[in-house]
Length: 288
Image 1: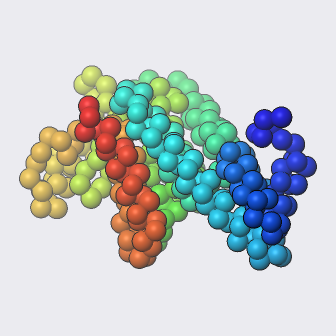
Image 2 (image 1 turned 135 degrees about the vertical axis):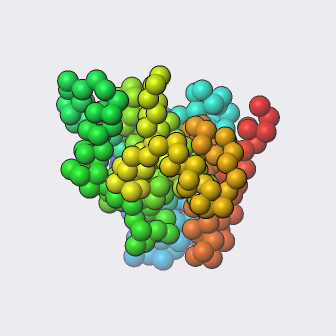
C-alpha cells in the first residue's frame, strides 16, 4: 500500500514508533515519514506534544525537515513559472506556510471566495470605476475594518496573509496583496504599485487611473500624489517606481520584508532560510 494512502490508525502507529530505541527501526520510520511528507504533519504535531521527551524531540526534527523540503520544492516550482503564469495567490500561500505549515489552503481560498461573493453583491448596478472602487473600499475598510497595523508594524503575522485575513490588519504590501487577490476574483483591472518604502494598488482602464492606499483605509490618490510622495521622501522620479509590479516582484518583496523583520529579532535561522527563498525566485529572474 502506498504510504500516502495510509489510514489514520496506520499513520498513528507509524508515528508511535518514534519512541523505539532500535536504530534500524528509527531509521525506517524517519525515511517513511519523510516519504509521506506534509500529510504526516498533523500526526507529528500531536507527537511533538507527547509526554515522552524522545518522541517529542524526534517528531519535531522530522516535522522541521518535512516542512523545509516541501517549501524548497514549492519555491522552486514558483520560480520556474513565467511571469504571466506566476500566481500571486500561490506565492502568498507558500509564504504563509513558512510559519504555518499546516495551513488549510482550501479554507484560505474559500474565505477569499466568500469576500468576493459579498463584493459582487455590492457592485450590482455599478459601472463607473469610481463607484466600484468606493464600494470595494467601503466593504473592506468600513464594514470589515481592515486596517494598517501601525502599533505593531514589525510583527511577522502582518506578512502572512492567513493571519491578515484573521486579524484584519497588516502592512502595506500584505493589505495590497489581499486587495489584488479579491480584484482578480472579480475581474477588476487592479495592479500593485511598489513605491519605495510603501505599496499601493492602481485601478486602471482607458481614461481612468485611480491609486488606492489599503494601508490607510483605502485612501484614493492621484499620480501627482505618488510623485509628491517620492520627491518628499527624497527619491528622484523614476518611471519604474510607479510602474506595475509583477506577482513575482510582490512575493519577493514580501519575503524581503520578512528578512528585515526577523533580522530585527536576530533570528538568524529564519533570515537564512528566507534569503534562500528570495535567491531561488531571483535566479529565475536573472535567466529570463
